[in-house]
Length: 364
View 1 (cartoon, rainbow, N blue to C red):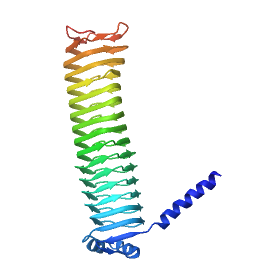
View 2 (spheres, rainbow, N blue to C red):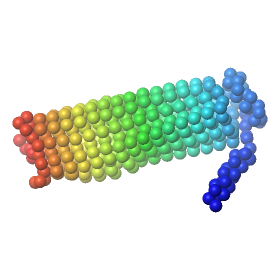
View 3 (cartoon, rainbow, N blue to C red):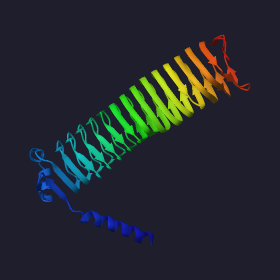
View 4 (tube, helix red, strand yellow):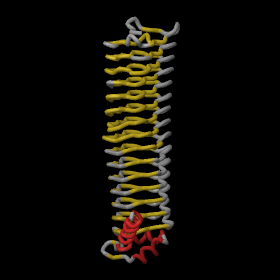
């Protein structure tokens, strides 16, 4: 019975696409399917003919074609499907592309400008070294896409899902992401400037070894992100609950972090200056061999471990902090640390040695 149902669904699927009427027009003129396909095989002639007037395409499938260097100017496209197609060095400008799927397509060194993509799916698409300028992506999905060395500027992403994508050595400048999700993505060794994430979700995403400046994240969920070895200026992260923030060897100037609960904040060998970290509960706070200056830890209890071994603190305030379980301050310099309404649980194990330096008001 199940096989019959699946066969019926498959038959309907085929019929839908077979019966769809191709609609191609150039300005006020209708272009036949055969003519359009023939023109596609000569890119230079295509660009001359089709760039003069508005091109409209609906219900069209393009497969196994080399369209390298093609120009789509003022294109209106609906319900297209591109498969195994070379669109390297293409220009897509001032266009509107809706309900379109791109599968195993290459856009290497392509240019997208002042274009809208709506309800589109990009699967195994290579955007390497492409330029994306003033582009809007609405309700789009990116699966296993290559975005290495892309430059994205002044663009807007709304209800976008990005999964298993890689964007090493990319540049993201003046971007806004709204209600979007990043899962299992790697944007390491990249540059981010003036980027805003609103009501978005991060699951296993890396921004390691990057230059991050003026980035604001108002998130619905943050499971795990890495900013290890990154150079950061002005980063704000706010979420109901935060999983793991991995900031090994990062250099951070001006960090604002706010959450009800943080699973782990890893600041090992990190240089952190000008910060405010506010929460209700942190499971693990690790800042061994770090340099932490001019900031405040506010309103939370540390449930498990606090590791400041070999760290140096200067002008740091612990305001209403409760330390539980384990505090390791061996070889730490905490002379310039103040404590306001903070305390250590009577059962807490505090590890210190002869090299530990504490302020007069220390609670350790």
